[in-house]
Length: 560
Image (cartoon, rainbow, N blue to C red; front, side):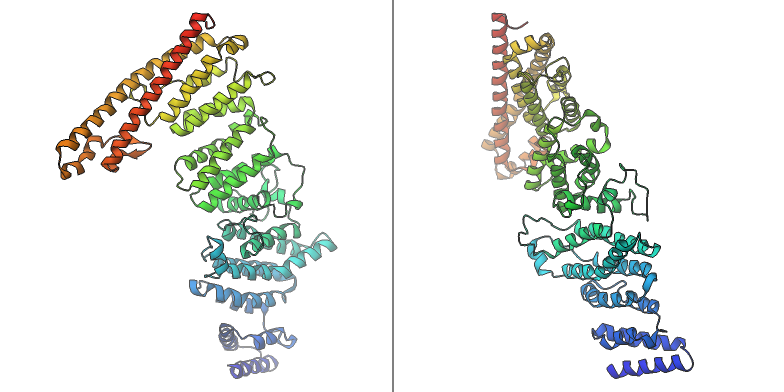
């Protein structure tokens, strides 16, 4: 092969001197060069390219040859081809002078397109094994960028940069933003876990993040371009899903992993940063992939931590993202099968509540009670309402939203049964139990209510209506579940095994905690029914206790 290439090179040089190059000369050289590249031995070919006597060998033609080698590769060949071709592409590009910018962009785009097809490692073990070569490719791409980043830095230090420099900067920026989306958005990136910073993907993330300030691309302009009314440049500042995903990953690496945080100006207030990041949090939490959800929850947490408690104004809740993010949280809390994500979801929900101002808390609670449609979430919100009322009754913490007439709006939403007598108390257990605890607390603190507001008469009426409907629901639910238990007991005594297997028809329309009871074994069905009866007893005991407290207040004259 070496002799063949040497013959082709000599023929090329002779043609240049005598008659000029013919199409078949180009084709012959191309075929021989590609064969050499495929074998991985390109020293002689590169020496020929760099030889000044061969200037008729157009670098642009060589670029097309090389780019053709990285187009539509078989997945098994992507890593090896990228690792082989990247240095050669870089060598040719460095010869192009001021015209290199568009070719750098084409090369980066071609390499990036193929690398994006490789599976992203899910665990650190998979990352270190690097079975598909993604990590090696990322390292090669980082090395590929280095001379072009240095060129932009050097030119920026000398003057304001020529048009050619700005074009090269734009191509590098496109590559960085594309890399943030693929593969970094899917990657597991956590500095706390990767203590020794041996992760190739972590190194690639730091390289990408370091490139942005190196080419003098302001991070606030990328992240907050809407709020800062930054003009669109080079098609990067768009609302496309791809652009939003890139910026979401940028926000995560900056504010959660603190990569290049020293380059971020400290002039932006925590509330402003939160407001801008909510769009990215909304996008991340709307996805189903664990890596997206985890990044969204962590970015949400970090964006809230620096915000002062009880400070977020109610006007923020009118923004679309401040409505949709809690709705995504509800889905995570109630549907997501991954426990650690549910636990993180509860923590960030409480953190968000803590940061809201009194009026914002009041509005948020109303919204969640109306929209969550899940008894567990509703119970959690009702518990928070009780905590806010308790805090408002303490000296120095008074506020009209949880101790004045405004609190009645919340109580009317909480102390009611939207489905009336048809309410399934077992499915609604969390909400009902927290509502009864709230009602008991309000009655026990009635002296505080009389001293601070005039809502007691209305509260007493709400209490009467609520308990009246609860008694009806208890009677109906107890009768239904008692009948189911009785049927199962009788069935167990008189039916054979075949009949027992068909018992599901007795309760085929009943669901508990969003699970169909007929899908359960007979033993589990029986336990569920017994648990329901115990729950009803507990509810009834709370109702009796509330009535006793109310009667005591009336007898002693402490209740209106």
